[in-house]
Length: 463
Image (cartoon, rainbow, N blue to C red; front, side, top):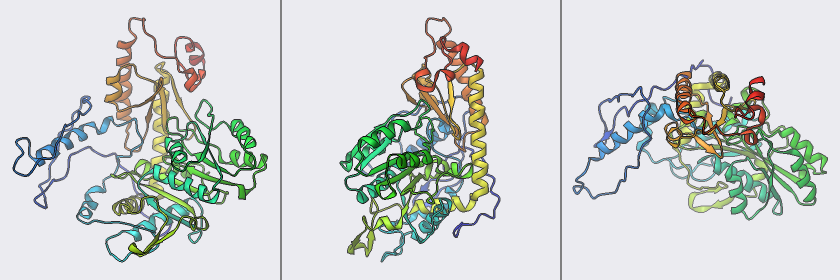
């Protein structure tokens, strides 16, 4: 696709946590250093309580010592980072480290050159072309840019819809990312929060009801391709049919697809993200499934829509339709490097391994009598919330109500999952050993068929 190469059969390897290859000391890379990795569970890192001191007036640890202690802590904690969608399985930071000596700013439109040379827009356009091909839109028909993350992508996509339909109403599932409601607040948009089913998918009957209530006003719909907590996928085809059933023509609605995590999973299983359907924009997070040391993302929309946002800025000798203006010029290079090195074969392997590992975790928890749910085409395993806050912190889990989840990213191995399962089973014996306290009932959160509490346990075992 595009100018990126997929000829190399890339076999992604799990990262071996380690410290910096070398600290920058007096402008030079120091000698190679390796840090010892603990084989026993580590404790969550504590606040360093740092302050900025004047040179020569610091009686505490040196700058290098402080940094090395910080790196040591992070290195020890890598294998316990299983609750949030960040791919730490990449090795390209060493090759790209020399770029840190340059300030690269991709200010303005990616497709227009600036009057300065310190940018990476050529890399950025290569990345955008790759995603345009992936999501099936002709290169002369799209516009996009590398964002600072999924939230900026959502803010931009919804803004494009708002500019097309100034009186439009924003519709989004209650399980959609919080940035969607933030966009409604920032843009002073009328907002309809659509109910979600128990698996996290949009409730289409509620959508239909609210579309009919607001008939006469354009609809701006956020479609979640992988909900934040449960990994549920809103059915784009059902939403399009619902719009048609409610009498909305294509000039009366705009659809933004938030595919922050699943945008690089779904296309390699069942491609439901395509501009051949009447969608307006798609966004993904670059630091999630793909992996990047810095938060970043990709936003793609139709070129015909962007004129409503573009403004000529003489100061930068460009037009600008982005949210942030100045943009990190390093992230497009990291994304370009990863896409080129991994290729479609590498992504297919990553996707299969993550899906298989998610099923592996779900099956083992289920056999152990733990409440657990896994949506189709998802790598997010939802389970009952561990009772001990220290356990939650040790494994860096995300929790909502009586639920927690594990996101099985490319860098998470079966060894890590086995360690988590073993630790959880050991701790549960302590939490519930005397019978006075029971595991929480999560039937209302993940369904009775997935709940292993004392009340639903018989049905859970039979299922």
